[in-house]
Image 1 (tube, rainbow, N blue to C red):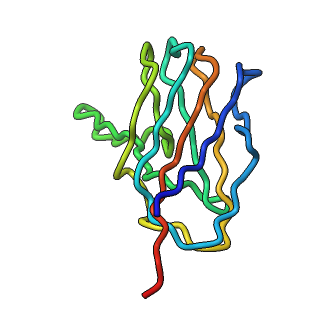
Image 2: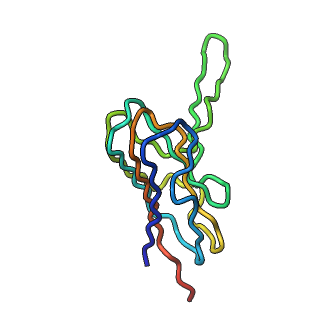
Length: 134
């Protein structure tokens, strides 16, 4: 059975805001399927969201790295463990960029708006498939 956890934030009062509802409790093991993001007003720069399972992000660390051939220095950018709604876009779907395949039962799941990017009225939906015992 599919489950959908929906988080919403009306407007923005800055960055690092918890999206409503505050958290969902999962009473069964679930596999991660997809994340969908919608903004009524598209962001003017990339908007970033993070979803947590008991305080740990569900997204893969996608930090960028660069290499300066002249100096031989390799630089690792800031760790990005977020879902992104690109500038000028009203919707995005993310699948497969998860650090884990499942969320275990008795977990608390919540979503943070990391950077609104100038957008407003965001809805983030996490699609899960409930795992049934054999």
